[in-house]
Length: 146
Image (tube, rainbow, N blue to C red; front, side):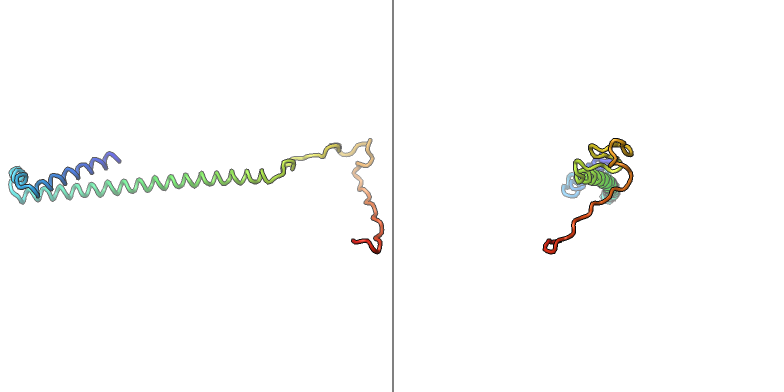
């Protein structure tokens, strides 16, 4: 597309240069009228060429503009996708950092050090499945704060 756009731009510039030469220099005008036959035929031919080149210029510019907008839209979509991935990654990192280093992960079973890993042990009668009695607290003294 870029090559076509450049070609049309070069053709428009060449036509503009020839038109200025024909309009401004009588000697160039006389030679071109000799090729075209009459001045009216020369100007009519220049008008037709100008309309064709102007149409080509407008078409190529509009196509280029549409293609550039489409490319920008595609890149914006890609940028938004990458931003979403980065946000998800940062949120994942934050949740990992917020957890204490020694805190257990969700879904894993951890046991404190020194306790048996299965049911209860016969060697330690205090580790049975029976509920443990709670110690009674001493009665409050009258001057003692709560």
